[in-house]
Every structure is written in C-alpha cells, then in structure tokens.
Length: 615
Ligand code: ADP
Ligand code: MG
Image (cartoon, rainbow, N blue to C red; front, top):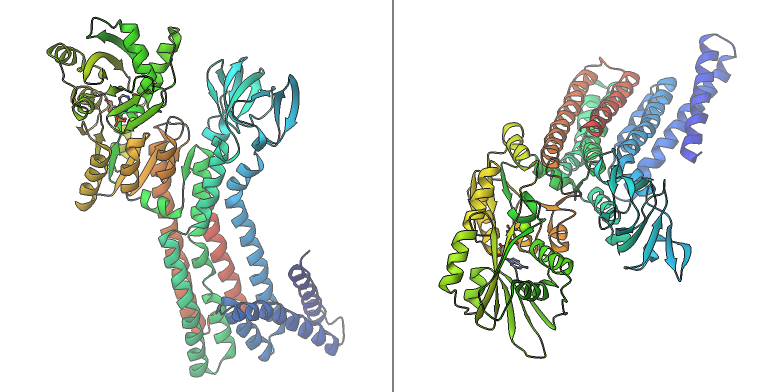
C-alpha cells in the first residue's frame, strides 16, 4: 500500500466513524467533532501535498483548486463533505489509473508475451540461450507448444503454427520446409528446425514491440490541443470561482465550482482513446507509429498503391527465357541474370536466383554491385571487368545498349501480360527473361471496399513497370488510374502534386523505390513481410503480414478513434460548463460536485475502452 492509499483509508475511516457516531448520538459531541475535523484535515493535507509538489515544478494543477475547495469546506464547518470530496478525488484518480492501465494492456501483453528462451544447436548439442544472443544462420529447434524465439526459415520438419500474436488470426496454419516463420508465433503441433534470419529488435516481434512503444510516447496534435486547453482552464476556473465568491460571499459555492470544473475528463479524453486503438491495431497486425499518424489516417481520401509486391503477390514466375545471341543458351542467360541479381532484394531478383538454383546453375558472387531503383541492376567482375546489366529498356538506354529489332519484337509480344527484363554484357544485348505476377487474391475486393465503405475517393497505382502489364493489373483490381514507368523520385513527385491539389494521401508500397514516396505521403504504409528494410523504416504504418484487408480495418480504426475523441471532448466540456453554471447558482453542493466530476472522467474512460473492440 502506498502512503497515499494509507492516508486515504485513514481519513475515510475517521470521517465515517465521526459521521456515524454523530448521526446516532453514540459518542459525546466533542469526540465526534474531533473525529470529523481530523479526518477533514488529513484529507486536506493529502491533496494539498500533491498540489504543492506540482506547484514546485511550476504546474498549476487542478489539485490546487481541490485544495482550496476542501479548505473552504472546512472553513465553513462542512467537515464530512470535505472528507468525501477528497475521497472522490483520490479514489477516482486511482480508478482512472486502473482504466488507463487497461487500455495499455494490449501493449503490455505484447511485451510480456515475448519469447524468453531459444533452443539452439551448437556442436550437435541443444542449448538454451536468450533469443537475442542467437546468431544469424544458427539452427534453432522449436518444440510443440513453444513460442518461436527468432525469425527464420524452416529447414526440417512440419508444424501447425498459430500466428495470432502478429496477425490476430487464431487459426493455425501448416508450415513446412522452406517457409519463413516469425518470432512471437506459436508452434501448436509438430517440431521444427529453423535457420535463423533475424533476432531481437530486428525480428518481426521485436519490431512490433519497439514500434508500439514509440507510438505511446509521441502525442497526437489533438492531444496537444486538449493539454493546452487544460493549461488555461485551471487559472480560468480559479478566476470564475473567486468571482463567484466575491459576488455571493458563499465559500461553498466557490468550492463546488472548483471541484466540478477540474478538467480531468478533458485531459483523459484523448490519450486513453489513442492508446487503446494503437494497442488494438497492433494485435491485429497493423503497427501504427504514433497518435499523430492515427489522427491523419481518419482524413485520408486518396490511396496510392505500388504494383509489384503490393497489389501483386510479388512471387514471380519465369514465363520465358530468350537468348538473342548465338553463343548463349537460355540457361546461360538465366545464369548471367542470376549473378547480377544475387545482391538484390527485388521480387524479380528472388524469382531469378531461385529458378537458377533449382536448375542447378552455379551463381558466382559478383565483385561489384550497383542497384538502380526502378531500373534494374549492374555488376562488374574483376576478372574481366566488363559490366553485366539486367533491367528494363530504360536501364539499357542509360548504358547505351542498342535494342535490336529482334528484342523489340520480343518486347512487343511479351509485355502485354508480363514484365520483360533484358540482359546485356558491355553494350551487347544478350537475352531477355519474361516474368509473370498475379494480383493478390483479396486486392480487388479490398480496393472496392475502401471506396465503398471507407471514404477513399480515388485509388492510383504508381509503378516502375511497363505500361501494358500495369494497365492489365489496374483493370483487374478496380484501380482508377495507373501511371507506369516511374522512377522513385517521380512517385514522390506525383504524391506532392496530389497533396498540393488538396488531397490527403496515403501511399502503400514495399520496395526501395517506394521509400521517397512513402516519406512524401501524409501516411506511408509498408508491407511488413515482403517489404524492404528501408520501406518499413520510412513508413508510418506497417502491415505486419502484408494483408491488404487490414487497410479497411486501419481506416475504420482511425475514423472511430477520432469520433470517440470528439465525443469525449464535447461531453467533458459540456458537463464542465453546465456544472460551473449550476454550482455558481448554489444548486450543486461540493459533495455532489465531486460525484459528478468523477463520473464524468470515468464515462470518458469507458467510452475510450470501446476502441479495444473494433475488429
Ligand atoms: P513497382 O514500382 O511496381 O514496385 P519497381 O519499381 O520495383 O516496380 O520496378 C520497376 C521496374 O524496374 C521493373 O519493372 C523492372 O523493369 C526494373 N527493375 C527494378 N529492380 C530490378 C531488378 N532487381 N532487376 C531487374 N529489373 C529491375
Ligand atoms: Mg514494389
């Protein structure tokens, strides 16, 4: 028990005993007087101490008003009401703390559920270590019922994995060799050996925790507004209360004004709602960086989407490989392409290197690697020093590679459905690879829903890919407008233009080439799984599982949060103003005032807790 709680208990017991013995004439009046008087004095000291402490740090807090109010009650001989007022204020504060804790519980739970140990295989032995000390590449064993401690890829075994902790989806899914698994998720059945790819703060679960923690610290603009009002509120109330006293000479009226006008509910109106929503969203796989982001989310009217990896699955299939040079077989073209793509994170690179590996081709490690976002890649090897270039026609132009009529024909034939990548050595075009990608299953449904139900007025696709594929995907997914062949800076520039025209823009993307646009947009949203590090770091919001259907959820959470905050503020202010008017007329006693004041704050808290339930 804290000192405050002890004092609260002591003055309540003293006060109640005094009141009961006085009411039923059980003790001599002097004794009941001392009981009530000492209770009220203790109450005054308890609240007054808090007020002094705040004044010492130059905060003119509501405790000052409360102290004056209790003092005024005692001075008017109203001892028992003075006790009750203090009881309501301190007890109420404790209740609010409790409710506040409940709203951050979603966040606390995330931290508490962090995996504590990892079983690693070292020198053929299973040893228990702390998850953050596991090295990348080490093998970790996860047994049934255990939490996966690191991010990794299954190298042996099959398991049913429950990913509720990062996706909110509680149905377990079967995962087997070669599939990625994420820290914080649980193996329900089966045991697996995984090759570690990320640990600690770099792991999926680590990132969730650090983002959610950051989110709590930074205040939303609306929250700052409420704080600002609260700051002016207290001196204003002091002035009103003193005026009432000057006009009526009634200390108790002044006391009632002070108590009912305390802006507790107003101060609580915003943070409770924001913390509840950020926690709720995190549990469903949506990481929102801070309250400001959440507030802006409610105003989005334009959605910009990237194509490859965002609207499409980004799991590309090689549809065709073509050689334009008599000395190169298609397999050799693939091998060259794989060599250039070895260091790239782009979905194309993954598809090409994977196919080359499956065909058993040797992929040497390049000595020099250069990445051109939105264009392609280029390597040079020290043994012969000639550049090998893999990318689109614009990259070929950049390196002065002639597009032969042969190649032009190939492009015309394949670019309708697929993305074609060209491979050149020095200035000679050697071959082409044609890659096909599919829209994500729920893309069309989600985008349609966003426009029908979530107030999105237009959806525009911005991509670095060619016009034909782009238009094809756009028409499959109910996208209003698509602009192709953009460089990373063009994407950002387009967003700036939309913002200048008065739109509030959200951009969702996954690649390095999306990072400038994500930063430029009012809200940047990154794909959490397929997204590159830089996209995730630049974004304000991360969809942990790449699930597009979280977009409508996100917008709903944003809108509802703002609605609830506005309800809270209106309600809190209205009660304050009506309360002040009635108290100054002598229609509310200090005792009633304290009850109304406390209920006001609790109603605001309860209203905010509704946000924990949005699905
Ligand atoms: P999106 O904007 O749709 O996500 P990107 O900007 O990532 O697409 O890619 C745009 C184009 O740049 C691709 O269609 C491809 O032609 C080229 N490109 C980008 N990265 C690579 C790469 N690693 N290898 C080959 N081509 C690439
Ligand atoms: Mg992309």
